[in-house]
Image (cartoon, rainbow, N blue to C red; front, side, top):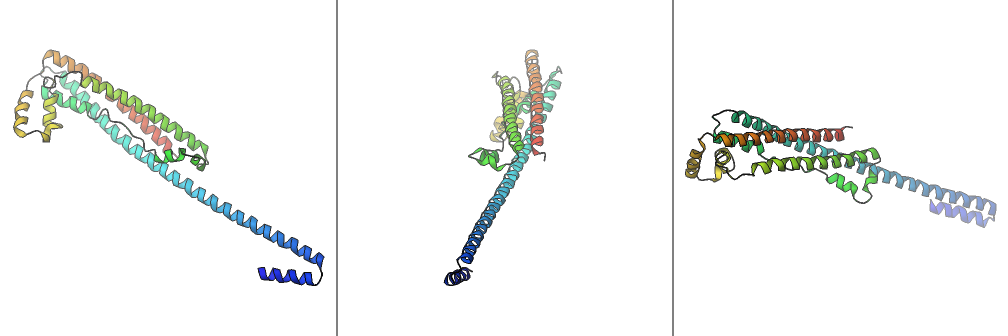
Length: 252
């Protein structure tokens, strides 16, 4: 093609047809400009296609993170519901005059199990978006606002959950009479000491847990168990709020 244009140009010059040559030169320039514009258009199209692919990739990653957040919250909610059940059972047992140490201790252990567990957001895609100019990849700015609101709200709920959990833990460890309230015996029978403690030691300690609680201890543990009911009720509420936030974020 280039050789053909060169041949036409030389022929026109040799025949001294300047006006035709000028017209030809203008046409050649126009063709070059059109070629450049087409190349730029193709380049823009390719860049746009890459941007769309990257945007869709981020949408997929954000959805995956939201699904993981939902699964994590559901697991924590189930734990909170189990704790609430144990808290109520502890109150129910303590209302009886013959409340036994080990049975009460077992409910106390279950009522506070993992109550101070923290929720960790899956935010890798969000953090990538916030770095540099990556936020411009998402064309719908309403999505960016929704993401900012979601993570801010989750952090707020997490903070309340941790404060609430710490309150229960502080109550649990406010006293050192773990044998008197039966929690140590319960841990030996069903908790962390179940496998680690030698069998002969376990048998000896478990015998200490067959006594009824004193009136004073029963009153104290009843008050504490009611606090655990309150704390776990709040935990259930907070985790349900977190689930609502996650499900709103997942909505198309």
